[in-house]
Length: 150
Image 1 (tube, rainbow, N blue to C red):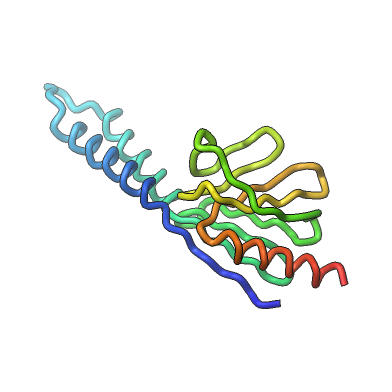
Image 2 (cartoon, one colour; image 1 turned 90 degrees about the vertical axis):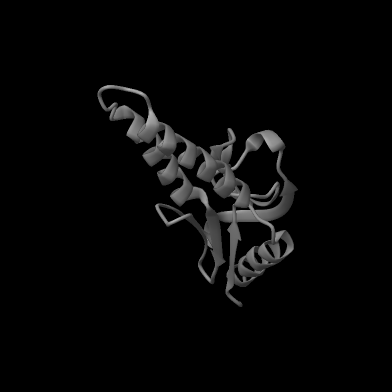
């Protein structure tokens, strides 16, 4: 099996979180006060941490697993191919948003796309991976499943 690797950049997340980070940093620095309010400095730090953790989604499919890495790599997920029953192309809903979300019966990992590949797992859960390379990701997962089941 050929190894699949793809990284999607979340430009909307970068623009929105970048703007809010910059605005909150300016507000913290220039807030009118006689005494410094250190809590104000926490907001831009939290926003910057969110930006670092959700600005991209790297997906790798190899002989053993589907691996996801969000942003700088603090959030990493590995789904063994042996745990996957099936994979299908799906279209996400706009209100599911981006980032990491629990959808009731599984997790969504996405930074930019409504298009996704949904993995149905042996335990009844689902793992939905947002991607702008849906056909190639689906083909890679299905190829890995076929090789595993031979």
